[in-house]
Image (tube, rainbow, N blue to C red; front, side, top):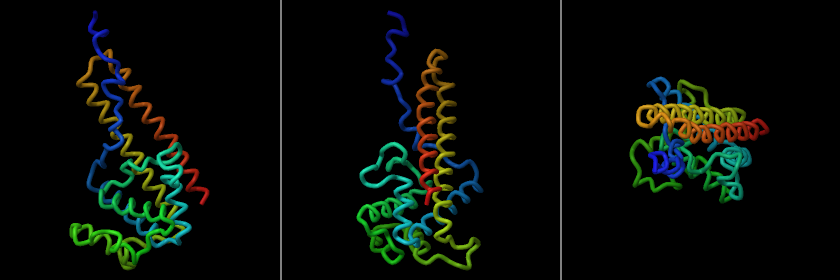
Length: 207
């Protein structure tokens, strides 16, 4: 039996399914811009009318019946770069699913605040009481679809960086004969991400 016959098929070795959770901004300026967009999007989601918040959440991740289906971002995807931002977004999704989108006054009661970090409590305070004298204008209802798309695009670009980083690792660790199958496995994620982004973009544009 040859070495090729003894090696398992690529799909039993790795399908690179973990790659969606990788990829980070490259420099401090990009990180700051990423965090700012995420925070503005969360602020807009929390302060928007309930029907608009619901529509944006459904455009991003689908309603309860379409969750994790085609054309929406998987609920497990790291859509938000900062975990604290992701935690707030998860609560917004839960509140939309329950038919009562999270309002600014509900932020503190939505979390066990005494068990959270000081940084997380500060985040909740900033979202509930945004500073109109800050360096950026407060987001409005009209800004929400655009901000949501900006968050999606940031996640999308991090995904591409993750794909490239993973393939770079493959290039230095795998046999030449296996490079094509690895690239194909990673390309499946790329094609799926493009379809998802296109569908989400269309849903947000329709709002």
